[in-house]
Length: 622
Image (cartoon, rainbow, N blue to C red; front, side, top):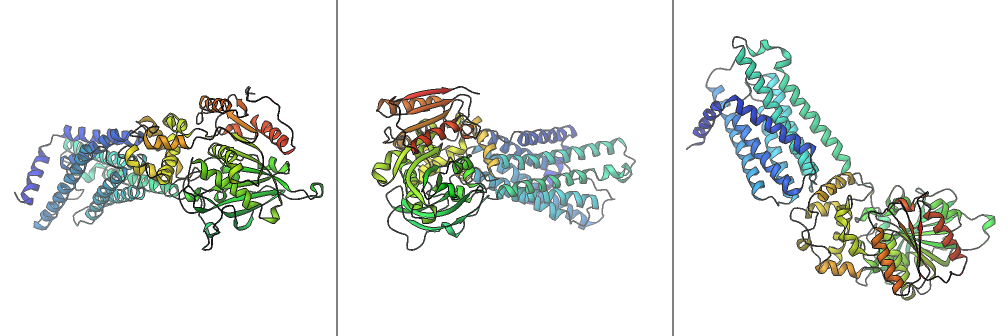
């Protein structure tokens, strides 16, 4: 059967479709579109069914719906019939494309989100382009040209939006296609209403029904344009990273072959409090496999006054909490460098006349993979930052050091304290304070899907471990369809505007089966996580502060780790602050802060520890 005859058959079938069935199809399009727009965080497998069904419904609507009736008397002659025939052919092609893609999605529900983006974006661009081209047909009236062009242009914009988010993160796929399907259904219902009114008043020409009714579909189409433009405007800034890595972080060709060497330093002023001065530094350290790598950080010291005399500044080696995995997530690159890594009490530290050395860690700021939650290279970056900072003569740092760290940095602080005697023999380590530390990565990952937005932290950890360890791969642990989603999420810092998309997508993952296809605590990944559990013995006084309401590093997990340390003979001053969450426990108003400062002050003053071994203090909420 030739293509013209096929279109004739389709046209005859379309005329036989009862009006009530057309209304049902359009209502179904509206309902399904609303579901996709309102519930964009549906699980991947369910979303595939919704998308596939929606695409097939779109194709059926293309077959069933009549062309909008012309508002002018129909054109006469063979040329007009040929143009109408061409439009019918293109509607047939478009319907077949929508149905074929819908069937493909339904038969392959585990397709990757990158492929989903390509399919949705491609079909929307194709349909939109046809609409724009059709708007220039000779026999079209001005209101039809406007509506066809507006619907077509909105399809093009929605298609570009879909392509611009390669991970799509469920949210954009659902909202983009859902909005398109919603407008398609509303437009179809408008046409059916107009056809019904025309049938009730057969003696009236459509133009006598009033200008508002004549241009109603055009108004709806303009609404679609407004929605498409709004979507593009809102999502564009979400793709912009909050920071740009500059040349300071590039390793020189003649990088020293020893760790702990200062490579370069320059004055730094961004968000540095009054009464302090700072530098950002680039230095060498030891990577995962023993290779020399470069890392960056900040050095902040008090401005010397007559009351200070000539004493060197005691050093707080600050190990920041999670800021992200990607290179541009270095705290020294952020708008508020120390604050971004949970150092909320910089002014108080300076007021104590202490200095801060704040490493960014390997791979944050500098090139290469960031060993997130990998113990030894994190400790190396911490200790080498202090060794390099002491080579900055203007900073005037003393040898006395107390290591602080929160969350990711708390784990790094524990590792740094354990490795100091062998890795940084010249450092005078007076104590280690680990605050809500990620002491047990296995336990942390085990319950990551129970944490709101836990998939974000899982993306950082899995990307780091897959890059660090050859035996850990996405194929073995990550659900089909989620790899692209997870990789793209790992490239957004917590401070990036686009993180809002990661948060919404992470919530959808939590409602689903999570990102993992296999138990992350088993196999190669499980073994590697165990390898990076913090050491149980540290040759220095140890303070561990924990929020009693922490949902990220739960108190039971921290207590179990502390108990193991105590069983190994380690002295621990363990304090649990009731009612405080993971980040709140290190805020300026937390009762942990005065305890931490008093404990640190005693360490710098050389006060002996009470011979109490392991102690636990439960601090009630105030």
